[in-house]
Image (cartoon, rainbow, N blue to C red; front, side):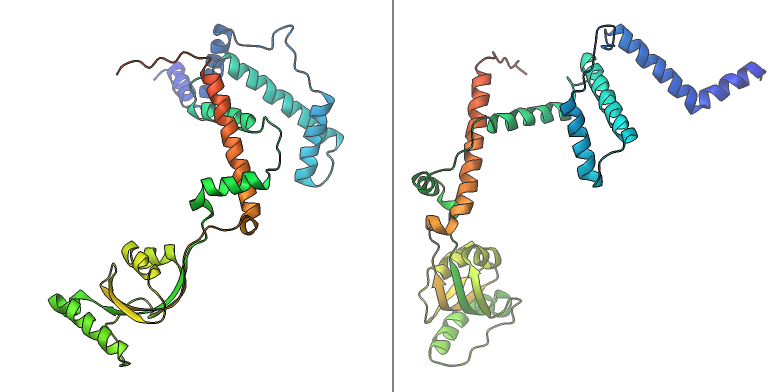
Length: 279
């Protein structure tokens, strides 16, 4: 191979050569697309407030004020970012980037939701808000109970008969062990949601409806049949405003921000004619 061929081959393998080629290509793109906002007459102004903000951020991060050299570097970094940002916009690099589109849309929604002055809601507004969203503020029911389990694998078609006989025996004061079960016999202070999660929704609703003080059943669960003795049972209820005031205020404020953002969007939406092409 001729010396010139070896040189060319070496260049093609050299990362610096690739970098130079990419740089030249980008330069051509900038020139051809009307970029280079930094032409004569273009300016980047760094106000005293900008400098103060840059220094405040530095101090917050490092716990001290920047030196003169560090402050100069901060300003230059700010100028660099501004210039690159402008050039990226001039090239339309923001137009087809899903992440940038989504981020800008989120910022617009944030600005819309924070646009109006925040105010504290009155008690009447909060009470009405609680009534409109009962599930959000619901105080769950709680139950403490003992259960005796009987499984289909052990008793087959006679499962119901075995459970019924065990119920009569335990009501008569006899000791009934039931079948081995992975959950504890005594369940203390479970919420109604938790009972449903552990034993199945049907079992949870049935147990929450039982009156305390007697063995009852059999009740079907996700596992089999159970005899149940409820010791204590408190139904779910709607809370008073004083019980949930702080939480209600936060939820009300969030709802107001969402409402403002939606109204803002609807106002903007009305300015546009939207056309969706047929597929």
